[in-house]
Amino acid sequence: MGGHPRYVTAGNPGPFTLDGTRTYLVGAKQVAVIDPGPDLDEHVASLVSELAEAEEVVIVVTHGHADHASAAPQLAERLGAEVWGPSGVSVVDRELEDGDKVLTDEGHLVVLHTAGHARHHISLHWPDRQALFAGDLLLGEGDTTWVGEYPGCVADYLTSLNRLRYLELEVIYPAHGDSLKDSTEAINRFEGHRRNRIEQMEIMLARYPGVTVEQLLPLMHGYKLPEAAKRAAKMSLVALKEHVETENR
Image (cartoon, rainbow, N blue to C red; front, side, top):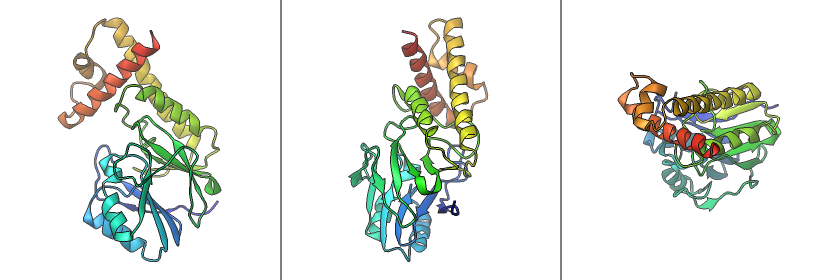
């Protein structure tokens, strides 16, 4: 297997982005730029510098969240490149379907529909390296990513994780945090966390009939949850509650 791909880390560290968004560059002359990141001038300038020798560039966004996609218009304009990505993402020039290929001079990337973290989310399988660019499907540390954007997102997320098991991956490159070199362990860890949360929700709904999300928040996230994290936590609880209630109908 060849070496790891180049990446540039944006200056947007935080509790959800870890060390910042990693923008991956696959190829030397024919390059795919994966997740251009937040619209920070310094980050875009670093990417332009890294791509100085490139002859053909395509920008690929895994999903439309600002920390992944908001730099796309500025970077595309500076490079004269198109933006590709899933349907439903406003910055995309060309919509990618499941199974589409993105060509680079270091091998092709295969588009996988991996909804869950976002309704419109893709990952990119790099068969030549037995690798996957996962966007926010998994993170480089811990055992969870945020899942709470839309009804049905929990079921979608588990389905997306299961898709990865058939790829025989040697490494996973998340958009936040270090690469995951034991892909099976990582998939099991993230799936295990989600199923544990589902089980906890089942217990709470059985124990407290009619319980509200506001009441569930301290029960499942503790009483010291930072104010900045409460909105995301509530949305994830809404999604878990909806998933359990749907499964038990």
